[in-house]
Image 1 (cartoon, rainbow, N blue to C red):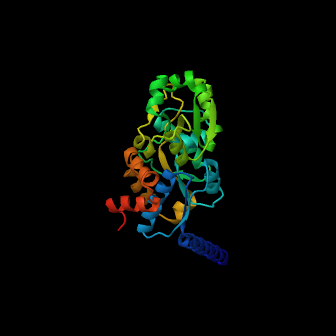
Image 2 (image 1 turned 90 degrees about the horizontal axis):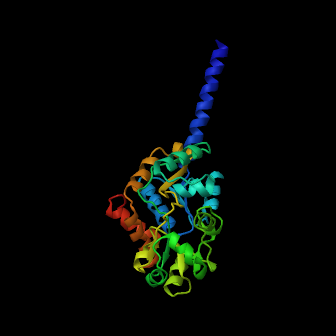
Image 3 (image 1 turned 120 degrees about the vertical axis):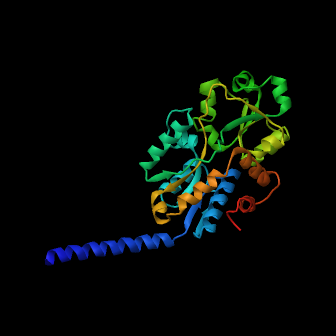
Amino acid sequence: MRAKLRHLLGYAALATVAFACSAAIAQQPVRVGSKNFTEQFVLAELYAQALEASGMKVERKLNLGGTLIAHKALEEKQIDFYPEYTGTMLLAVLKQPTMSDRKDVYDKVKSEYAAKGLTLLNEAPVNNTYNMVVRPETAAQYKLATLSDLAKVANQLKLGAGPEFRDREDGLPGLKAKYGIVFKEDVQMAIGLRYQAIASKQIDIVNGYSTDGMISALKLVRLKDDRNLWPPYYVVPVVRNEALAANPKMADVLNRVSALLDESVMAEMNYKVDGDKMEPRDVARDFLKAKGIVR
């Protein structure tokens, strides 16, 4: 009888400790991270402000750097979640071969991340794939419509690209392997500076993203990936399991925001930051107010 009582008391003590730990975790702010470009700042603010409107405390750790830096911050528990892209997780993080089917990519990445204690929430209907873009006169001069067309004249063109593009399999190595593309010159520059540079003719071609508002604003020509180098790159919040357990409403709030997005909406919000020089937090707040998520 005494032994049974000791067991019961032991279980009660463990339950009390577990509850106390869970409560302590729940009192901690949810730490949202982002990578280092406009769309990431806007997405992080959208998710952060929606969480705050639902009553959760939020700490922002934005502009962390590139993909591998943000992912490392997640694995090392420096942040609780950040918005990522399915194709980027597949190729840059997991180092898996490229896949073209949206569901297959999501399922593969979700399974691999689950083994790391990380959960992929619902995809937003935003496929932010790479776009190689040129000025209209460049497209006309070299008869460019596809990346296969580009391969024939790339050695006459000057590229402006971000730092990750040189190392990722879906960047310059992939362009060379799939298409035989080698540029005359490759200048490393931030995304905002790339569009200024192509507009002022300092460079001839940019590696952009399909939701970059500046592409339409500058009337740039997108070159078709006719050999399917790039997989789907759908936006999805990646969350540590502990953070989800400590904040039961978190998944529903983030999924609700994701469902409101699409590529045209993201391009418009990105342009408000890059073109109209608005702050990402203000752009996010205006959107969420219009959708009735924040007051």
